[in-house]
Every structure is written in structure tokens, then in C-alpha cells.
Amino acid sequence: MSPPASSNNYSVEKRPPTYDQYEFTLPDLYRKMAKDELREDDEIREQSLTQMREWIAKHPYIRKCRTDASFLLRFLRFRKYSVPMACEALERYLAMRETFPTWFKKLDCNDPAMRELFDDGVFTKLGQDSEGRMVILFRVKQLNVDKFGPLEQGRLVALLIEALLEWEELQIGGFRVMLDFTDTVMKHYGMWGVSDMKIFMDAINRSYPIRFREINGAKFPKFAVSILNLLLTFASPKLKERIVCHNTVLEMKGKFEPSLLPQSYGGELDTEEMGRKFLKHLEDRRNVILALDDMDIDVAHYSSLWSQTNLVENEVEGGVAGSFRKLNVD
Image (cartoon, rainbow, N blue to C red; front, side):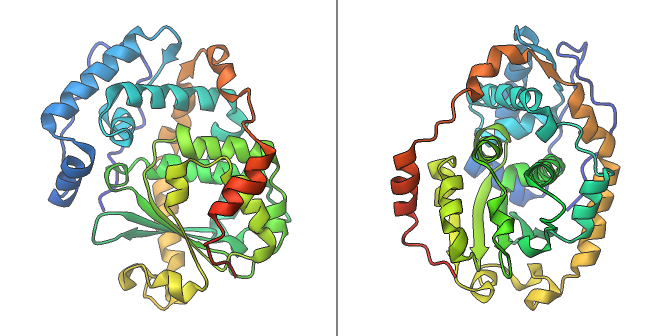
């Protein structure tokens, strides 16, 4: 997987004098996937970029925004080249960042809390599978819940998403997640309040242009099922459909190619080495990610998007819990 093009100088001028010219340089696997799954080809891509740039230039509430292809394509691919839907996704992304800056802005890999969370080995980027999908691993027990609460945890995920979206391979192929809940305790789950859950799940569901292909979880404890059900009241039906629960880690890892398994899971990957590589990527792209904060939108116009909790008591006790009865948990 080639690193994203390095630049620290993306303009946030909504009407720049010129626009960059995009060239598709990924392997044929991604060209075919983009065409078959996203309807992307050279002509549609160029037309859609032109339309989206014109929309940004005329938008009465967007004040500053990146218009380079590498940024806009993540929204077009997310919405399979429906330009109106891609524009709506971009609008919501910008409004989310401005509405909740403590969660989604100043995402700095050099921040002591972020650095410690990475060093603890909570997250590992494992690589691409044979179908071009990125595979990532979260080992939840590595999370120091005595030191880091929902805000730090959410900011870690936000930083990871921004960094991962720098790869076009992820924009096209999406990713598969391994969640290992082995040896977790109640404190890993009980510190999240309803408002925290809603902000975080809204970002995952509707505001970040990410393609979840599959979310695999193993050894999820029975004592936390009610909290999971509450969290999933804020999840979209599509996201719920992509969740697969496994009784054992052995069962979960059987769904992944052996070449993508860490040594501790019976594979060959060195998670410490993989962690160092990803941290190097974060450091290389640090200025790019921090510069996202220079974008600006009239946030007052969008305050109503997050004014309702959308939490219905009987939905918590009925719908979601009922839909998850078929899942096996440890």
C-alpha cells in the first residue's frame, strides 16, 4: 500500500483560481472495485468533482473548505457518486466538526494522551486483504480506562478515521474491523453517557465518509449487553447489519486471512512494528490533519441537526434488544 501523497499546503479557499488535476494511480483491483461498486470512472469522477466544486463555491454557509480531489473524493465515493448526497455528507461533516470541536478538532498525534493510547497498543492497522479491504484491530483491554474517558477515546477514533481516510484504497475498498473484548471489565463500557454515545454514533453513521464492510467482535461480555443495546439505538440499520458477534477469538480470526493476523493471534505480524509504521504515517500527515481545522462553516445554521436526542425508551428496551437476541455473546 503506497503512502498518500505528501503535502502540507492544501488550500481552504472555497473559490481557488485553479483546481488540481487528479490522476488515478491505484492498482487495477481498485479501479475495478471503484467501477463495479461505486460507479466511478474517469468521466464520472471529473464531472462530479466539477459539480461539487461549483456547489462549494456558491454555498452561502461554507466559508472555507478544501477542494482538492483527494479530499472531495472521499465524500463522492462514500455516496457512490450521487453528487447531492456527497455534498450533504460534506456539509454535515463540516458542521459536526464546528459543533463539537472538543471531540473532532485539534487532533494531534503528538498530544500526550493520544501518544499514550497508541503506545498502549489499543489500535493496529494490519493491512489489506486479497479483496482490497483494509483490516484493523482494536484490543479493548489495552485501553486504560482509569486514565482515559469517553472524550479521549472518541478523539482517538476521530484521529484514526481522519488518518485512514488519507488512503484512497480505504476510500474505495472500505475496511473490516476486529474487536477483541477479551478480559474487559465493566468500566470499559459504563463510563459512556447517552449524550456521548449520540455524538459519537452520529459521527460514525452520518458525518464521517467511511465504508464499513464488516465489524467483527469476539468475547463481548454479557454484563455489557444492555449498554451495547443502548449504543446501537443510535446506529443506522446498515451499520447494524454489518456487525458480527463471535463466541471466541478463534472463531473471529477464522474470518480473516492468516497473513493479516498478529503473532499473538497465531499469525506472523508484529503488532509493535505495525504500530511504529502507523505512527510514522500519523507524524508525516500531522500538519495535514491539523490543517482541517482551518475549514469553516456557519455552524449556527446547522444547530438543529443535533438538537434532538432521538432516544425513545421503548426502542431501547424493545427494538434493538430484540434484534440482537440472535447474537451469541460470552
